[in-house]
Image: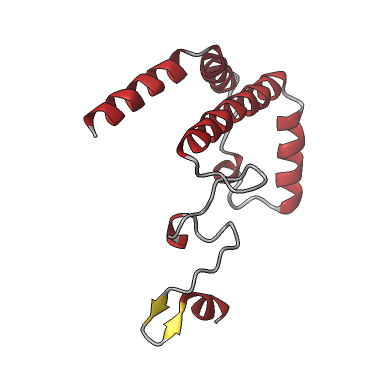
Length: 131
């Protein structure tokens, strides 16, 4: 286990030093410096739908926000590639290149559509979900 944790720490360090991650943190900092709130849901709580739409349009027109979106996409793509590589090496990919969901639907909130019949008293998880 120690070796796994040391390797995970080394991976985290390599990610933190990557150009992709540095570009993301720089883009986030530029947004903050320009007064751009990246968590728009919290900032717009209580605003009317029209105010929300206008705020979203203003946000989309900001060059710093566009750079942030691009950097965020690049970072997400890198992390998807890292996760895919881990799944490939572990042999946990299904046909189509998606990670296999395994046997515990609770860990992924059944986003995969998998309906394992885990018994809860007299009722299965799938039946309970339909209520």
